Picture 1 (cartoon, helix red, strand yellow):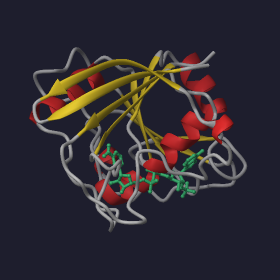
Picture 2 (cartoon, protein in one colour):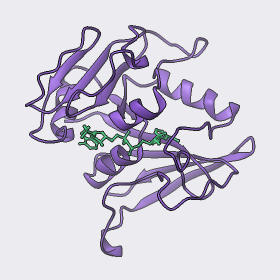
Picture 3 (tube, protein in one colour):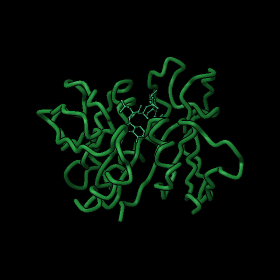
Picture 4 (cartoon, helix red, strand yellow):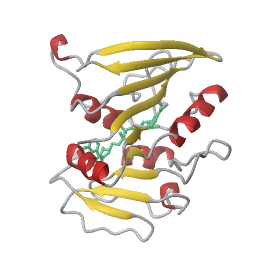
Length: 211
Ligand SMILES: NC(=O)c1ccc[n+]([C@@H]2O[C@H](COP(=O)([O-])OP(=O)(O)OC[C@H]3O[C@@H](n4cnc5c(N)ncnc54)[C@H](OP(=O)(O)O)[C@@H]3O)[C@@H](O)[C@H]2O)c1
């Protein structure tokens, strides 16, 4: 058993999720930010990769006014325990779990560490552990590499993409989904568009992942 998994992201009209330098930028408009905080409040845990922690330093909490209870659990996929000790996810505002591989000996005073996976974090195994601990709804907030891992492994139920009305460009700018990508069209991850809703000057695309 695993949690219900929602991937949420904001991208430009050309599919980029950051600047060419990989620095995070605010692509969401105010309406989308409100939506994201309401969504966070409905989830038991929020997960990101360490790449996002290093570039964006998100605090992954629910903004006041949206909170329905305690902040969700914050989870970082971080094989070698590279999350900086002054990272916002370690600010004590919410419980935090750092998922590392089994050879990582690092400990964090302000986070629990779960060691699973020989090289990178074994995500299916981690999801099993989270489910046993009561995480029924998991929000994945990137970045590009983590989105690929979840989608490729068939671990995503919903994909929510806010598309801002901007173009960023750049050959190696992070896109919504990175990783290795598919080799043949037959291997494409199929989505079913459930809704397309204008949101201020952008559009929210809500997909289900076809099994
Ligand atoms: N616009 C948006 O919605 C949005 C949201 C989030 C992030 N971003 C952007 O996305 C970029 C970061 O994306 P990124 O691809 O560089 O990093 P990422 O996806 O945030 O993190 C990837 C890292 O997570 C670690 N990891 C551990 N186990 C993993 C596993 N099983 N699968 C995948 N990753 C695993 C790996 O590092 P180790 O090997 O060191 O463990 C891997 O390099 C930044 O530019 C950020 O601004 C944009």
